[in-house]
Image (cartoon, rainbow, N blue to C red; front, top):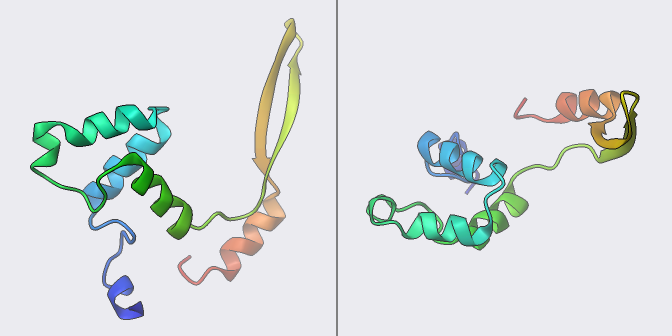
Length: 106
């Protein structure tokens, strides 16, 4: 199995094209219902992916994609708009460097 994985540079996705579609579907804020409708389009269904539902796609993302260091969030007030507070998501840069250094894929 390890040899099979090494032969697939976009594992757990079957190709660069599938990785690109998964990346788009997962970061564009689409609902799982919208993703399922997309996957059922005639054009798309004639070019099947290695998953058939949004749930399967997200389960694979959760199972195979490395999470990396923990995310933190801080509320940042905006001085120009006193009633506005924006969330700032970040990771500890030392933890990120350590993670990358210890990751053999890097």
